[in-house]
Amino acid sequence: MKPDLANIELLLLDVDGVLTDGSITYSDSGEQIKSFHSRDGLGMRLLMDAGIGVGIITGRKSKALEYRCENLGITLLFDGIRDKSKALDKIISRTGIAAKKMAFVGDDLMDLPVMKKVGISFCVSDAPEDIKNHCDITTCQPGGHGAVREICESILKAKGLWDAILDKYLS
Image 1 (cartoon, rainbow, N blue to C red):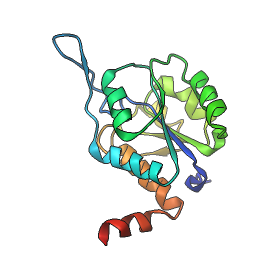
Image 2 (tube, rainbow, N blue to C red):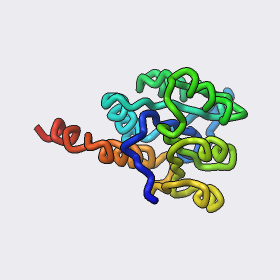
Image 3 (cartoon, rainbow, N blue to C red):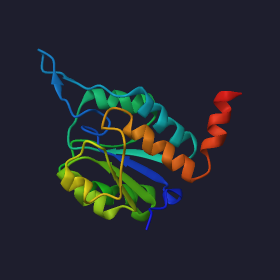
Image 4 (cartoon, helix red, strand yellow):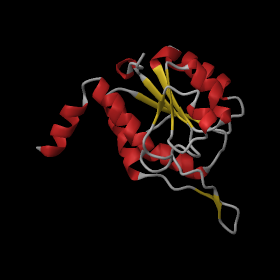
């Protein structure tokens, strides 16, 4: 049975390996540096403009992520999280959105508990096989290279919103 993306009201994302390519770079001063794909950012912005929420659940804290979320207008940020399943429970409580109306994008073992609880689970194409075996949809693109944009477009298309978005840019 094919997952129904039209029911998604909130897209939740892991960061390292999903919004980034999984590389963690440190400067000489110990500052963490992350690279985000611009098309992923536009995809998230398009979702939010269409009334579909976007949130982050990640194990690592970083100023770079805080800046990225601030830039995109993402306020549902759970970083430095060891138990992502508990964070999901808090998100459900805070938003009032049922888990079955949420999608989560992960790429590794610590993401599996959330992937099992939400309505639709995604993983990026370069996720380990054991993760791919436990997700509903695997992207064509790898993490940090447009996988999130691919997911955002899929959700918008399933909801019948993509053509109007495209027309806006063509007119």
